[in-house]
Image (cartoon, rainbow, N blue to C red; front, side):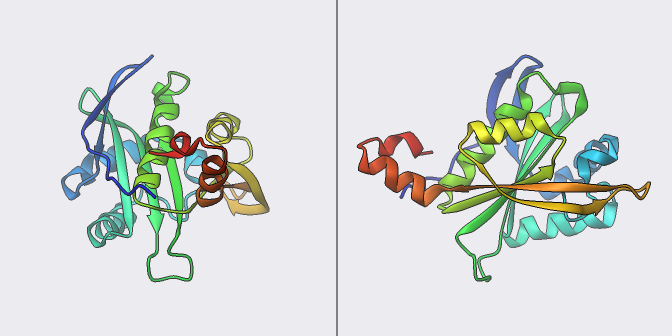
Length: 198
């Protein structure tokens, strides 16, 4: 299993123009807060906590420093336009499992930024040796679901009325999973192991 760590910054051409992917650092806290506070509330519902709150963002930075969260920023013209995060708990019963959480600014949606960010976050998760990956989102985020299905994720669970927005309306959450180890073994059996290498 490859565990070559990917290197950043990485510049990617999108329909929105060139976007730089780089690792989030404590110095990015104000930029990320500005990004999160401009996101529609509905875009934040699949996250366990509201990242537009300064105290939540401060805790996120601490988790990055501790190594349980890895966050990749998509930056365009000095502003954050997307964030891809890998969450894992090496001290849990599932140290081999990571969760990918992606959010993208509405101003660059439909222009390839979300797809590029999802692909890069997926590759980063593979490069750190995770064997299973999960993503979750509200069921109406069909574009994001399609992107992850294109990466080989499959629906594993549906949680009805699982989150409640600020207006009190409940929303369903879908969980998609990707068993990297199983797919890698199947591909290697067919002599195509390089297809799932980062």
